[in-house]
Length: 171
Image (cartoon, rainbow, N blue to C red):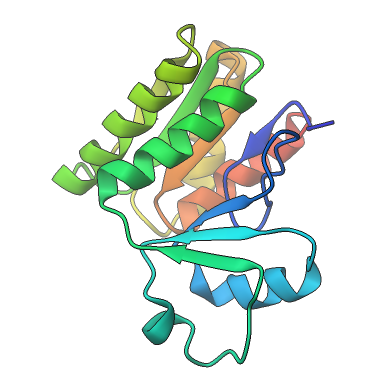
């Protein structure tokens, strides 16, 4: 059974009951440890060239790598969010309002709504990249006002604050 509140982060692998993979988006620094610690879980690492990004590791048989564009990365996260949300309310934190961030969010929300037409999105594109407290603050606000129960972040350390807020809210 999945906890009610989740964050799509490599620090908290998403385990879907009907899928046998854990999606990660370019967090190669944690993949080897997570894959070695969870040999029965398959990991999907996006935007990664294994010959370059995983060259230091001898074998990671439970890791699959694909290079996708930003729209595809957003869509992958959106499908997972749309399937996971129980409140039909998902969130996205971006570090800056950049074309790449807007592309990711647009695809994230569209894909979530494709698998769950009731899904609604909350977003912030001005969170910065270094203040975890900002992620905590935004996520707490969305949990309390919009009942957000799934988040995806594109804001580095800010994502960690978001994860902590969801964990505190019951995840």
